[in-house]
Image (cartoon, rainbow, N blue to C red):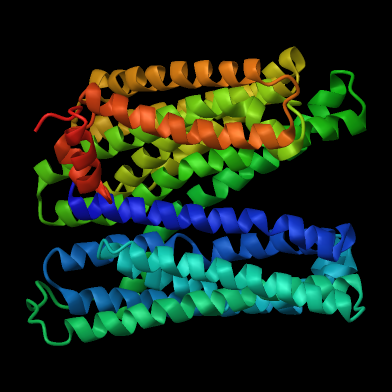
Amino acid sequence: MSNKLVKGTLILSILTLFTKIIGSLFWAPFQNIAGDETVGIYRISFPFYSILLMIATAGIPITVSKFVAEHLSHDDYPGARRILRVASTILTLTGVLSFCILFFGAEYISKVILGNSAAASSMKVLACAILFVPIMGAYRGFFQGQQQMVPTGISQLIEQIVRVGVLIGLTYWMVGAGMNHATVAAGATAGALFGAIAGLMVMFCYNLRDKKEQLYKKWNPPLRRPESFKRLSKKIIAYAIPISLATLVLPLIGLIDSFTVPRLLMNSGLTDKMATQLFGIYGRGEPFVNVISVFSSSLTLALIPAIAAHMSREEYEAVEHKISQSWLMTLVISLPASLALSMLVEPLNIAMYKNNTGGDTLAILAFSAIFSTLAVTCSGILQGLGFNKLPVHHLLIGAAVKVIGNFVFIPMMGIRGSALAMVLAYVVVCGLNLWQVVRVTGIRFRFGTYVLKPLLSTGIMLVTLYLFYKSMLFLTTEPSRLFYVFISLAMVLIGSFVYLLALIITRTLTERELRMIPMGGKIIALFTRLRILQR
């Protein structure tokens, strides 16, 4: 895998992780300042916005990255710019249409559909954000097509910082001014609007710099006559729709759970309140699993244009190399992260939620990350190869497995059955995606290299963490919540170091792979001095 691809993926992963952390930490101060009622109105206003935003973007940013990469692989920079212009026009139109639906329909949606007229003002503010977010996606796709991941990561981070800053600032001021709950919630949602504007401004700055850099370069003339706006629009939309459907399937699985899990728990003899509480506990695992998926999501964004560029130049050996390395990098990260999470459930649960209720459920759910991350990576490979409809079919099959699994396992195992159904659903999706990649490319999935070696290193890490955790518990008579916070952080740091050490000792990662990651040179120098890495 090229140095540029790995570094871009890791940088985007780190920036995305920071973005998610900021997006998670604001809830506590927001709740403390605004109160439950305001937070409730704020939450109610977002689902329709999220759905319309998905429809407005419709997978076009990923499509832009693929088509831009194909043009740039033949030194056709003007053609790549044309893709950006056409995509920006499409997304501007879909953004305006979505704005009209949400802004002018806010009163009806909030009162009739949601049954909470107080959310109307918040929805109108969010409607304004839809005017900016889709266009920002087009520019992100353009830079991803150049395998430049930093602009996307920086714009996401700035967008989140501004969003949270405006949200907390306006909420504090409006509550102090004695405004009502609906108005305060609308002020809080203004964070999404200002965040979108800030993120778009960042992309505009990167775009201006890119134009200046390319101004004096000599580019090859187009291989063929440029396609008309109409033809290019149809091409972009046709490729984007399956990708958009794939993004809608994952929220669909969440919707399936919200309808089936509480009802099945109540059918098993639990009260409405107990079923709701258990479903809430089940939701504790989602943020942890999402953190593990950050790398595979970032890798996919980098992988699609990279594979598309090599395919366009018929560089099949390079495609095979990128696919093989992407499998290895995905499993090198997801295997230890998922299995360590299953071990860290108790200290993490107590550190964040004061108790270990539902720990066994979260431990089962942690295993889903192994298969979901590999499924996402394989999905990116298939999309880069041009098979963008296959991942949608596989996700729909996975959703069906989740529904059947809920009905089979929840009556037998309670809420743990839902977690097991999720694991099985992702096993099916992962298996289908992996099978199709192997079938289409003929590349062999080397189980020993991709799974057994990382698993051996993971085993060494898990034994170390288990001994450390048990020894710390033995030395402490009455562990406090602060103790579990410390233990969680310590186990993450110790586990990361031991795992990296094990990867090098088992030669899962060689000096070549280490040089591709940020600070790889310093890591090599350290382990060479310790005589762990032989040069």
